[in-house]
Length: 51
Image 1 (cartoon, rainbow, N blue to C red):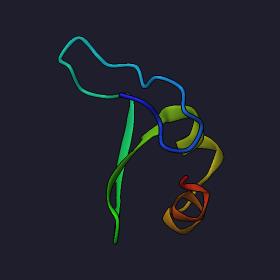
Image 2 (tube, rainbow, N blue to C red; image 1 turned 180 degrees about the vertical axis):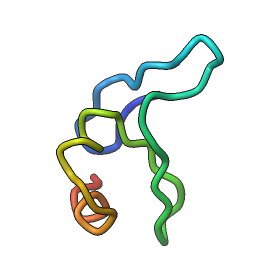
Image 3 (cartoon, rainbow, N blue to C red; image 1 turned 90 degrees about the horizontal axis):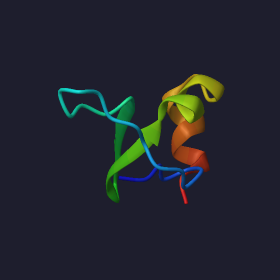
Image 4 (cartoon, one colour; image 1 turned 90 degrees about the vertical axis):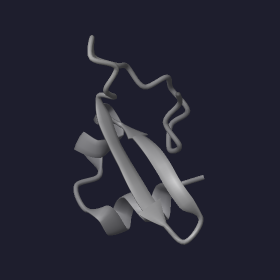
């Protein structure tokens, strides 16, 4: 699974959960990695950066 902002692979925990988050908008569900989530603090700025 890759981050929809930076394109890097999103790491997973041993329970197969992602280290990051999912963001939903009109186009569907997007995966965001932990690093991009830390840089972009609010949901609106994350949605603007989606490719």
